[in-house]
Amino acid sequence: MRKLFKDYEVRQYVVQVIFSVTFAFSCTMFELIIFEILGVLNSSSRYFHWKLNLCVILLILVFMVPFYIGYFVVSNIRLLHRQKLLFACVVWLTFMYFFWKLGDPFPILSPKHGILSIEQLISRVGVIGVTLMALLSGFGAVNCPYTYMSYFLRNVTDADILALERRLLQTMDMIVSKKKRIAVAHRTMFQRGEVHNRPTGFWGMIKSVTTSVPGSENLSLIQQEVDALEELSRQLFLETADLHATKERIEYSKTFQGKYFNFLGYFFSIYCVWKIFMATINIVFDRVGKTDPVTRGIEITVNYLGIQFDVKFWSQHISFILVGIIIVTSIRGLLITLTKFFYAISSSKSSNVIVLLLAQIMGMYFVSSVLLIRMSMPPEYRTIITEVLGELQFNFYHRWFDVIFLVSALSSILFLYLAHKQAPEKHMAL
Image (cartoon, rainbow, N blue to C red; front, side, top):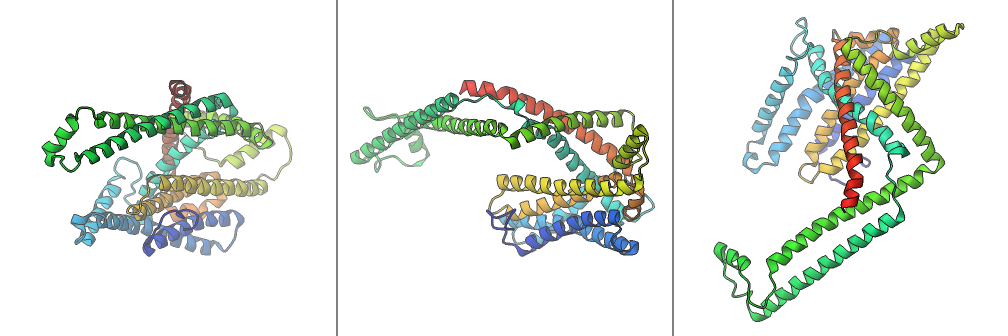
């Protein structure tokens, strides 16, 4: 509450509890993954906690959160306020219908399991979560090098900033001048008694706008000019702030830390190209990796160098480090994204609904993370996870991730290219 929603009041206690419980059980799943690699607790105990954890988080994501979202949405509508419980149930049943129909176009159904089995629920949650993960991953893989690399920075000088600030000050002076003219005209009209004698009603308002007293200011025309100048001042202010931010990034890129992040940008650029290439290969040849990348990489290195090496021992430790990095960056990245999204669209009436939506997205994101992280673990550590998740089409989720990732990455490249190309043109126009 202090970190994520510090500037907004989320008064409903049930909303706070649902978000906290969803976040806690999502992190517990990642903790259990670490326990699988390190061998903490007995296997029967880990299996029990996996089962309990998945049951609770599926209960929250499929039943509790959608119902309360509908409840708070209905509560904000005055016409439905008296029967809000009934309409909340209608909203939840509508969600369940579309949630269940989601499984029809995808090869995720299993006739062996009941309607409310873990397999049936998690298969649908996985589709939504994997789609969200792939979209964020595709954009992040492209945006990260674009943000870090100094190559994409515009050349901004102090003269450019001063010129734009001068234009902004001139525009503000013109706005103040025209508003003074409006105020003087209103005062003159008030002294003449024109304000009290002004005709009322719709036609009177039209007449007062379309006609003007001889010798007086055309207030409607001046107000239109003020509105246009205020819009221009907003654009100039945003452009000035953007130039200041770019100038700071240029100065930062000259520091040691800036050069380090610039190097990371080149590294992520190579990673992005490689990821897009591999996703394309996986889609074209309809393939999914059988071995986790850590074990496969160690085996290739050992065979190439021809040295004696305990692959099983080191794959465990390196997998632990790799999975830990994936978990930490996933949690941190998602929370930062959700916080920015919340600040952008939240209001006093919608804050409860927004927080519940974030809890829903977060839970589905982390559940699907477990589906995909499973492939990054050596086979001996996947056993309990595979048993708990049931007979899911794991290969489908990896192929689906590759498809959405490729679409998201290519779309992000096109979007950032157009934005980078239009930025200098916009600056020159202003």
